[in-house]
Image: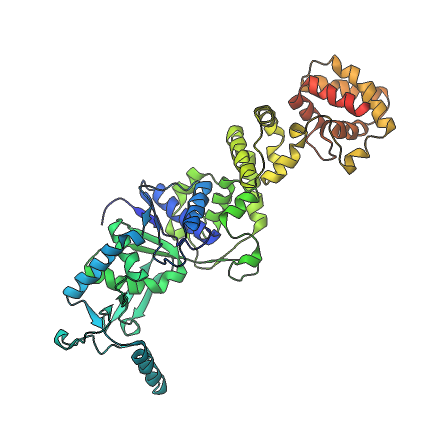
Length: 466
């Protein structure tokens, strides 16, 4: 086995990239990236009826949004079909597989009789040891010769050792009667040919591991390290499904979660490093190991996701955050921010990002920087712009015209103005919020003034006081 670690993510392109698949991809990516290994991508498109280019595209876009970059070219399983067939034919020539001519009716009859006699319904083909000279000229499948005694042990890094009695394993079909390879054969051949050292996948594949090991053993190939991870459940403890809300990764992007927060949350979903909840990609790569994955299904919790996303927005670099915000607007079909708005928003990030958990919340808080004059106050803000308030704003404006536009100076001017009129500053803040943002809940009025600049601030106050 090569000394370099090679992991893979192998989705079927029959729909969008769902959250369970995204977490599997993330675990494979973290494991490889943290050890200087390779993370490969294979599209398991052998099901020609259900595989679509659109679904492949959706998977690639989902991985791209999550920031899970892969090494080498994307492998198409379908395109390797001839190689899969060649392996089955090699096993046939070595006597490790055989042609089975049993019809569906004969197999059904075998099972019915076994059931009636209280015996195992696992099909035992009469063709396993038949002399090829007696083979009829009829359709056949190619079956592997399963070991008939003893046990197969799957050494799993998450589930521990899983022992399966070999008399529970049937002679698995490798090639169908039309000569096409089955999925179980294709997976093993592809993993071997791609040099995959660690197979990290959902525990719904655990039973497949014992059957796939028959092919590894027959071909005398190294068996990869297995790690079968528990599935994700909804908050109610049932398997995650559409009724729990968004499922496709693209839906989470459209809901406005930042990718870094999503990566952090998915990493914590079923894996832990002590009590650490919030961590960076670099820490995740350094810490991630198979021993930290729990055996029990993880529960998806939107509140935890939001809290982590809020922390990632607060910790993000302003330029990177603005870039991701533009991608979010594009994903929901909204126009991009123009240069002037981008400059203003970046300038405002310091007073926005520690108060938002998602991009829609960030945009809501940034309304003052994104709105154009004249500002249209919403219903709540409009209540703070009665005749008295407008009179106050009219009086305040000349005082601000002479301010040096530093925070200290603006605060001093506003507080002196309020004191001179024997009013609390809060009485002044409401009308200022309404005039500058058209909202009742905003960043501090001084932050808004500093971001907007003197000319724009005075213009908005003049508009509101009119």
